[in-house]
Image 1: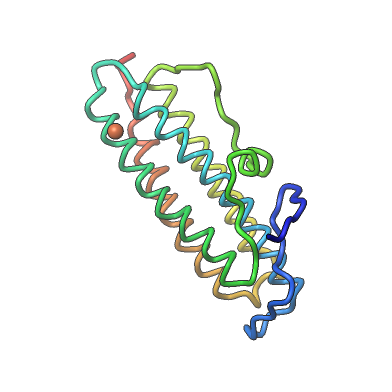
Image 2: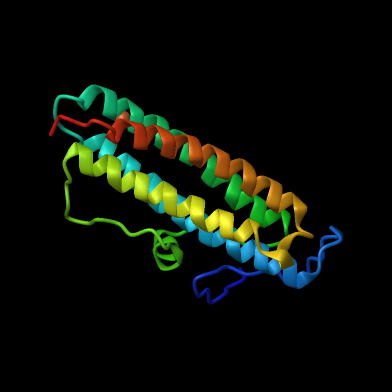
Amino acid sequence: MEHRDVGTVAGLRHGIKPGLGLEDSIRERSANMLNTLLADEYVLYTKARKYHWNVTGPMFNDLHKFFEDLYTELNDIIDEVAERAQFLGGYSLGTLSEFMNAARIEEDPGQYPEAKEMVSSLLEGYESLIRNIRSETSREDHHTDVGTMHFLAEILQKHEKSAWMLRTLLMDWKIN
Ligand SMILES: [Fe+2]
């Protein structure tokens, strides 16, 4: 068993040199970035599940189902992000404590927000993911890893759609 002290990222596997035409430094940067994204996606996924379980009020049925749609999509994205780190010869974070160390999105332990606040909090999470992905994909030094850039652009679009749905729910919200 190989043991690695991980900080907030997982790094590259030793002894594997994928012939992808990418410098090790680019692979490492991409793998680390993907792991940070993975951690954020995992925290947001968990938050959507928490809200799916705990939402109350007149919109219970709609929101209960909507939050399930969100976390189901996030679950698929999580798998794709973790596997993409492997394609590049990296490790993938896979423990809750690693996710918590690496994530930039914050949890709300002990809190059970009202429905509207749940929607706002998820929107904030999606928008912060979108901003982070956009800033990663606009880095000049990163463009040789076109596979990862394209992959991120697809995730960005999925998150933009979810953010739009959440934002739209908040318009003219009259129910508490
Ligand atoms: Fe459920």
